[in-house]
Length: 400
Ligand code: HEM
Image (cartoon, rainbow, N blue to C red; front, side):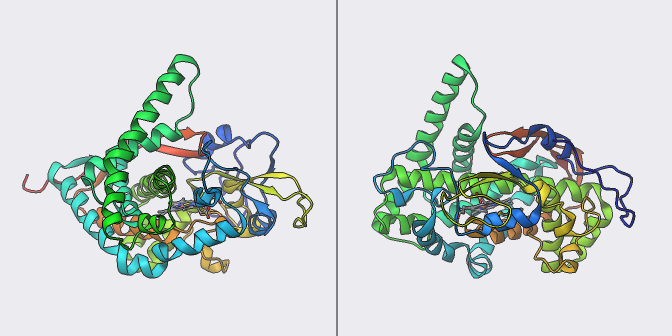
């Protein structure tokens, strides 16, 4: 795929340069699944994603046989079992839950991380963002009965071992061993203590609801890892990307810091529109069922989120410019396709945006803050998304 150009005459960025940081890498790296027809136009993409007849197409997921097939993670379900599960988790991720329940951990964790940064004068940004995302999602799931920092490391190892691209030969076998070890450690040190505590006394969290539904240990573990990759790994990348934009664009940063909550969310969603963490989603239209105009029953489609999010028919003129007023002007809510769409759209989007907003608002008020080293960008073909690493930030040291 080639990198598209932004040349509309009324656009302030009409020099033909696409400034999205991941554009070149994504253009080289995004590959639809075998047999999938790519969809780049927003109209067709939305129609497919919102169709009742579109299946996730992933099957039972990660090769696990479930005693009860309805106990597969929400991301692998379709139809009624999917709707039931979405209803069960909605209360943990609703806007009300974000502002009343989860805001506290977001603020507490932000204060702690910023305190550590100011104490040392330097930090790796992706470490801070992962620790924040891990703490927030852990509270939502109910992973709260082990040491928080050690847990964040274990879940990180288990997640990244699981989503890393598979190597061939002996290296691949070593990788599989490492993944098994990391997963078992997470299971025994974090998941089982959380389960035991909730067997004694239920709480208001995901693990408690899984126990009410008689989930077996393996299914509970997979739920925890699913939330981990859906909610921790994604938010970690997004926080680093949004910070990178704010470091490099003083006007955007000033606007972010001067805005109210809605204004800050608009800035963040606009950055995510240009740099969506998930690059591509797949949907299979049911055999023999009605398909939306332009799609065919039985066909597998690869929804190109990056193309949809820059389709002028959806986002208006000058699609590659960072324009936080765009969504309001287009009478859109700013999410575009960044959090998916239709039945499987991301239920954690409010959580992700609010924790990012709270953290970056505090971070960019730290005296002497600067980006000493911009992140390296890699591509993870497993999740069809970018990974940012080695972003070093510095600030004035407290007491120095
Ligand atoms: C910036 C951060 C995030 C991004 C970019 C993101 C993106 C997405 C996308 C694109 C999907 C749709 C997948 C599909 O249709 O196949 C999705 C689904 C999902 N996300 Fe997020 N997400 C983020 C944060 C979160 C958080 C914080 C949580 C949980 C607290 C979460 C939980 C989920 C779950 C459970 C699903 C599966 C929903 C279903 O299949 O019905 N996500 N996310």
